[in-house]
Length: 161
Image (cartoon, rainbow, N blue to C red; front, side):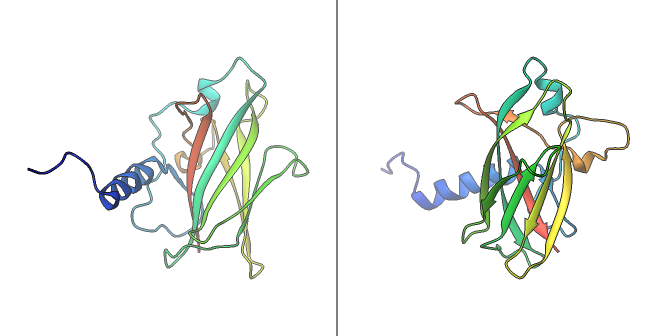
């Protein structure tokens, strides 16, 4: 009789599948297979949070090249209205990063800017939005959710072309 345990490899594949489904936005030009695009029917951060002026937000993701290989050592900067108030992270060997920031809410800002600088000096910058506005493409929207600890989170798949 087989035990009802899940092997470590199967567990890792299940987690990778869930993480892939949760990655709502591709930032730059090329897309790698398995990176999902935004889901425009879901409520956005600006629609969910209106009572406070700031909320803690964890932005995580993975930076890969056009060949879909991870880029390690890339600098990821996130800011809202003032680039002097930037929060920075560096990608690990698997191209993953996590930024813990305070996001303005309640109509103060509907977007953030994210910049990725590669070790070779190339840099790309994009803007992502928390809520729908005229002129904002669905691809520019980020989906935000609360985790089990009550923190707001979003995940980005960033492909550097």
